[in-house]
Amino acid sequence: MPSDTTDFPADFVWGAATAAYQIEGAVRADGRGESVWDRFAATPGKVRSGDTGEIACDFYHRYPEDIALMRKLGLDAFRFSVSWPRVFPQGRAPLNQAGLDFYDRLVDELLAAGIEPFATLFHWDTPQPLEDAGGWPMRATAEAFVQYTEAVVARLGDRVRHWTTHNEPGVVSSHGYGLGVHAPGRADDADAVAAAHHLLLSHGWAVEAIRRLAPAASVGLALDLAQPYPASDSPEDLAAAWQIDGEGNRWFLDPLFRAVYPDDQQERIALVERVIRDGDLATIAAPSDFLGVNSYRRLLVAAGNGRPRILRPAGRYTTMDWEVYPDSLHRLLVRLADDYAPLAIYVTENGAAFGDVRGHDGEVHDLERTAYIRDHLDAIRRAIADGVPVKGYFVWSLLDNFEWGYGYSQRFGLVYIDYPTLERVPKDSFRAYRDFIADHRAGSDPTTELGELRSKSGA
Image (tube, rainbow, N blue to C red; front, side, top):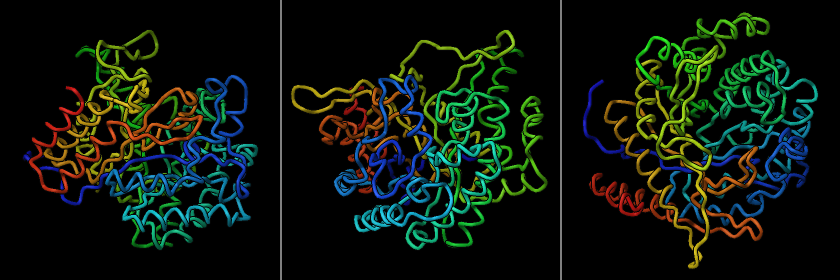
């Protein structure tokens, strides 16, 4: 691809991301039904410290305050998810009008603030009644998802122009159904493969439904992707890295863009053949307007005894024990453009958890997060210069929030949440990101912008 030194495009979208169960709270308000995460978090021993999303950040009641923070941050866009059990408490009709009304108000207030809503239809909170009937390993759950999609898009599609069908189907299937460490807590390889297939299938069906109900909308899917690096040039390490790539990346990218599952994944192929039907792969590969990329780290892979090994090289790490390696994002984006040629890419999640504390001055001086954002923005800038069609960037996350099995022990936010009081405290990274966005809009020299962000990070 050609290389140049262009800055971020003038229409580049600057955003921040969240998810319903992680921030909304109000789990029993206005007719909302039970989700698999409500059930999982209430099960002793499943979530650190017994934390739940029952209150979370109370975004359900405090969203006007948080939209005011978005305006101060200077966001172009806000990525949020719709809670399926708020809209369909049983997973299917009847519709809970009060639940959908909340998102109607949220969208209107975002637009009034000049912030583009980027809506995600599914961010892991499957209605518990659907799980009780078999969950994502069952084709019926994919069919129910389409009914839910139609109801939400029929209501909001006149104002929401950007739709993501699913967030990280790989994590839902692997962690929820294969490893059992996420809701619903099942551990069965066949269930995990079936769940992944039905999530992808429901994406394809939802693309058709969204285009029918909101023809001008842009629609895509957000995948969790990590670039594997072989530990050496040995054939064994190269093969191990390719295997990890097949399991985590190509198992989802190949059906989406090529209407096939990767043929080197023979064990999974044998499992998916049990549930796949004629026409499924063509449905999954329905052309999308964008690919959402959620990426936080690289994977350094070596051959092992029977299974590849993920190594832990020396370097900087977040409190999630994820290596800080910004060049992996650049390499991943270039690889996606070269291998799959998506029409557009949004970096729909990228961020870092650190042990944030409030100082004696009442502020949160998160130098490490500021450096993380700076370096990953530079990686994106280089990818754009290499011809990759990256159209926007969404920091994970706007707010500290419920971090799934880690409860409230991990803080990713640009805004610190004092959980006992729910006070919002913008961190230094909030101000650095705000200033970077403002400088970009003002047309400042990009080298100066990154230099200013670098000085604010203490680097």
